[in-house]
Image (cartoon, rainbow, N blue to C red):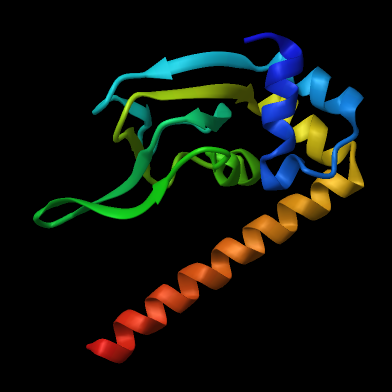
Length: 149
């Protein structure tokens, strides 16, 4: 896959949707294509958040540890981004993300990701909207569980 194809893929990721073509090409050029086999960890809880990953192909599960073992919190797939919250917070990974199927992804270093967000107000706005949407959806799931229980 060349830089133009990767830039086109990144354009479909909601938080990068507002970037101009030149910035998308630069982001694609500075990212690295990686592959994960089914069952392989993409990121592990409590590790340093040194990068974010955009899933190009495949599915992954967000896992957390519970008394009885691991529990699946959510599923991710094509055009989803992993690890952006840890990069933005400069905090360790808050969950493990494991490939459910074979996964191809673009790895974006934290330096590149942060420079993109801080240097581009449109991208920063997209990031804020995406994170707000995730919080809203998580709150709705939590309330649904509480109301059942």
